[in-house]
Image (cartoon, rainbow, N blue to C red):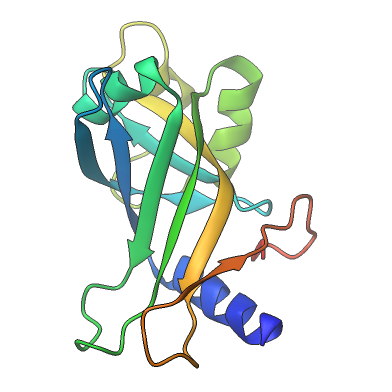
Length: 158
């Protein structure tokens, strides 16, 4: 069963490019934002946002966030997805260079200068602390924890 859940989680992470990132402000008001993500071999997620965006302003209060990754085109009653939580950090200096190794997009050319000084964007790293998938063998929605492998040579991270 564990291997099957790992396979499900890997497929979801590899076949999607957007996550819904959920944050809260200092008053506990929630906010959800879709963000394009890339992933490294240790299952860390990288995304780009404006420091002025609501979700990033919320992260300045607490660096904790939850997230969901799923294909919204799955037929009703058949879908599965990832739910999780973790911590988010803005990347700078050497960490930014490391993040740029993992962030790939065809939307625009990504260069270091885009994330420094008075630039509009910053790069962020979400380090998941927990991941869950639906158990496909249950007749009800039952979330099952999937272990996150750190420093795994397999680039699929789980």
